[in-house]
Length: 411
Image (tube, rainbow, N blue to C red; front, side, top):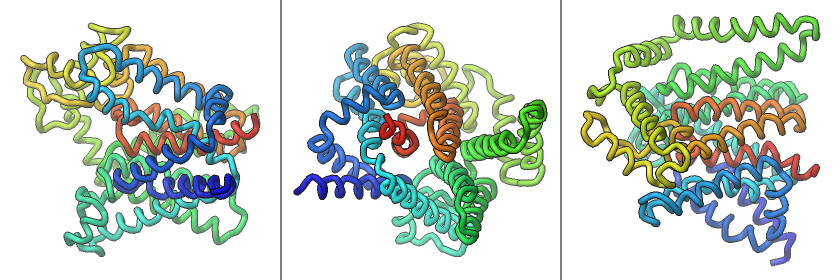
């Protein structure tokens, strides 16, 4: 196949991957396997070049490389360690994604593909939540086993859909602000409102609430910063302090689902006691995970227990406790620190800092979106292992590549 046709095929693969991000894992893995097999023969030295000259790509690969070396210590069987390492493979694919997303038409097609699938997800979620689409066995096969009328999450859990829908809401709002045609602006504004309402009124995940409010505040902050003169920055700072409180107060008193989920989280947090059984408390289980993982890190702060070593170490730590065992502490910083020591968690923070700083060199849309991505993952990594989870990790890698690919082209 001629190189130009070969590149065209790779470009359509990355567009197809963008379309399948919210879909079942098997679909993602098929396209990822095709990309891994097909890209290196064509891209070759370009992958090494972009890793060396693009800071975001370089730090991503550095974090993955450190996790790879983490398989060399600890007591985890090699196969199990490589299985956990494979969950972080998306970090190593960021340079490949960047190379395929440098072409402006490919970037636009891939973003439109993501918008299309998220619009479909929204339509299905609203149809199920409003009981317009009965959940028959055939429908459940199509939309995934976790969807119910009370919590209509499509394809994945409400945590995953809450993250993707909130970020899609953010991107829809940004695109509405930059398109010129009135009809397209109204369309993106409608999609943004539909996504926000889906998170607030239909889904039950607190992750979605946190992401949605964080990104809403970020959008308002940027708009105020653009319209206020430099002399009025004190108004901007005051707004940044008061706005979150006003929004949270309004949501807490005006949205029953938000009120109930938030009240439950506060009650479970207040009732938590170390060493007690919290099998019926979601927040209590997480606090058990955090406290015991922190003890593991204190015991081996520099090298941890090796990549893939968390589950066994946690089981030993809690063997004599009335605590539910886990293979995932639901905190990416703790997960990395427990596996490869504090340097692993610091590398993740370095990646976020690098993204934030490099975003200053991006065009306006990409700059705001890139820093929104950093805020989203820096926050959600506090209460979920976002890079370990397949869909969340793939979305982070894809959006990182999509947003920072212009730097690669410019450099």
